Length: 101
Length: 147
Image (cartoon, each protein chain N blue to C red):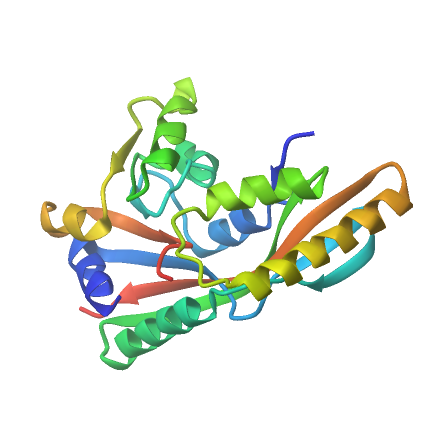
């Protein structure tokens, strides 16, 4: 049996109680291997997911479900660099995904 | 961290929201489960995220005090990761946390090894249908930028 992460879906349930992703432009900071991204991305208009660690981003790109292609993009980049290169007022929802600490 | 939160505020559209998810400031539990029953639960050894979490909490609190964000609501939830063996789960967690610079010393490592030997022993004694889990408690909050 492979490792199972949050099979009870407590995290995504809590996330959906905090935000409605329908038609939203989303930025996820600290996406890792996309574990959480897949769970809400189908509802969003577009997701930009970033992480400074290449191993996670490589896995996320490999595992991107075909129905989410074009809707999710991954960047291997620290948030500080990403933010500096971004214009203001772009996103409806920003998720700090276990990444502030 | 406060600078990162200021940058997030700049990136958000008017009416946008920030969702923060982070673990609470206590060691996760290592648990042994069998068919829905918890046979064993003790704080995980060699836990060294305390200061990081404390800093994150302080940064968020500072941003709320400075009226950069208003905390609208939040809640806590249980977050469990299951493996069929201690080795499998530890490999997975080591990879997932490989970015974290650990401050664990030799004594901690020895305590950790003894702890996981004990967990393995409990799993073996319990027989079939047994799983090992790391049980974290996490906090999620919805914040909105103050115009």
